[in-house]
Structure formats: C-alpha cells, structure tokens
Image: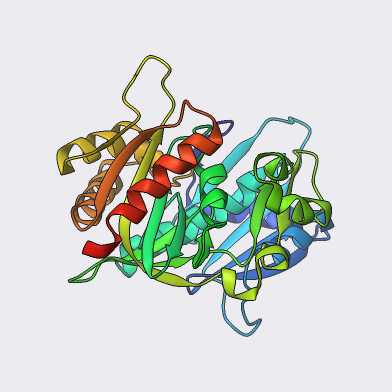
Length: 317
C-alpha cells in the first residue's frame, strides 16, 4: 500500500488544525453506518465524489470523525491520525479511493470499540434472500466477480467494497456502507451489461469514478442489508491446480489472518485491535459456509464456479 498511518497526540493535532484552519475548505458530511464523518478539502472534485459516494448526514448532527486533505511542499503521502479526536490529516493525496477508504476505516475504528459493529473489506450481495460475500486481497477479482453475480436473477448488490457486520444468535446481519460504487473504467469490458454505466460515469485520473448501478440494473437491484450465508475467499495462484474447496474454520482463519484481514486500510494495528478483529472473524466465519476459489481462470470461468457453489446449496438453507 502506498501510505502508512502515523499516530499523533492531541497537541500535535491541534497545532496542525490551527495552521490550516484559514484554508478555503469545501466540506461535506457522510453517514457511514451512523457515524458522521466530515471531509475538508480545497479540491472541489473530491467533495463532489464524496457526495456521490456516500449517504449524506444531517448538518445538525455533530461530527464524529474528521478528514483534512492537505498539500505541502514535501509532496510525499502522509497520514497523521489522532485517535482521541478521531481526526486525520492526509497530505498530498490525489487518489479519491484511498480518501474514502480512510473514512470507512475511521468509522470502523469507532464502531468496533464502542458498538460491537465490525467491518469487512469485501463485496456483498443478497441473492434470492441468501447473503454472499467475496473477500480477497487486491488484484484477485473480488470486485469483478461481485459485479458478475449482480447479473443473476434476484441478485441485489449491497456493496462492492466494504460493509458492516452485527453478530447475532443466528446468521450475521450485514449492512452496506456507501450509496454508490467507485468503479473501474474497464468493468464494461468484462461484463457487457455494464457498458452503458461506464458511458455515463465521469472518471478521475486513476481511471475510476462514482457510478449509480441502479441506472443499468434498476432501482431494486441495490439493497441495504442481508443475513450472511456464503463467504467466498479468492486467491490467484497459477501453481495450484485446485480450483475450489470448502474450508474448515481453522483454515479460514489462517487465510484471513495471514492476509491481514484482506484490508490494507486499518487505522490502528496494535495487539488489542488485532485480537479484537481476530475474535470477530472467528465467530463470523463459524456462522457461514466458507470456500476458497483460485481465480487464475478467465473471469467467466471463475464466475461459473462461484455460482455453482451458491446455487447448489440453496435448498438446504
């Protein structure tokens, strides 16, 4: 990942804030699972993307977490985070994807400590009443395959990137985190159904843009929540001939822990937080059926393997 989080004290955070408070910031608030996150930036494009990306928070609600997007002569990427005030200063960020991921990580930091609501960096859908999630390291096809599943009958997208989990006595209940998706410009090259969406989306300098998938798949194709049943892990390994297998709980835990929870955006990685997240994942995974798929095949072939898994067991759910 291209940045590291540096924890700073409340006095240093105050000094930075005082040094930049006279800048001509544009601001916007987002409702991220009930947490009010406010972004400050002189770049109007970031504010516009933020508003397209997240659900708005009422201006009368006090801010729980703050993001300041700053620039300086050093030019290097820096993330300075004060946990006490939940304030982060991002220096020289020109990639919106990391800004919005840091916002989600800050909300997650608050929720997992105060409300026992945990976050997963993954895609999730409700398919005919069945929760399905794809969790994977970068560049293994998580987003591509989630959009492929959206083409199924009775499929409803919850998120293609990040969601929140509340553990219950039964199936874990999950909720999405964003209003619209931050898509790659080449999604229409993989699945033709989404070419009209690409044609109507404004893309940034990284070839990504905020898109409302409802324009193509209909207003009912997106839903807020589901109860999770299938967890699909992905890997890409040309040396492994095994395409798909169901994992035991210990095997699933080895996968998720060894891959840093498949989440490069964690504000704090101390022993307490790692223990907290490990405990959460053990319970989450234990309540679902977990599979590992090697996505070294063509996207269409990997899609068929995933569909076979989630459709073959429907009668027993």
